[in-house]
Length: 219
Image (tube, rainbow, N blue to C red):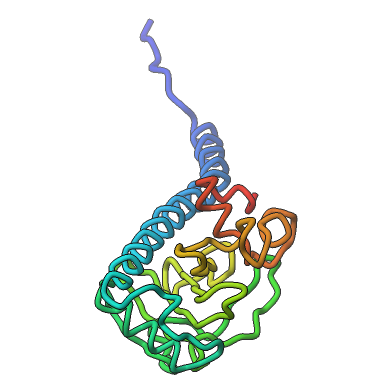
């Protein structure tokens, strides 16, 4: 008697392909998100290191930041900060005080809870904007001395989405001789209230990401 070769039926193949498709549909978004978070953490730490190095070299050249004569909400002070930091940063685009062409900064951001943030950083002349060669954008303004000397915002992927605090946009300040991630015990926005406590602004997530090395608050 001739032996029949074992084979899958068309129905069995279709069922198997369907199961594979379902598993892929469930796992691929998670893999994409995890990869995005790894890139955020890596780029944020890299950009923070670049910024800290620029401050160190700038102060060797121009003296301590406390002596720069910065005035809060001053376009002149924002430009002065740029003059002192630019020589020590690898800049791809210098967007200056008014980035109306949105080369460095998008027009709007969202908070972590999904609410719209109403400051247009790109057009607001209090903020000086640049884009670095590593793809991140940085902008800053002078702050009050009793809080911090300078406020910084780092968007790890520039104009690209999601353009959201705590996802790709993070806040820092320069105070007491160092760059301080927002959300630290010494900053203006506590991480518990402004990052990890449910639906929040996302303003305090920089500290969490730098210290914890993850973005678990998103899950």
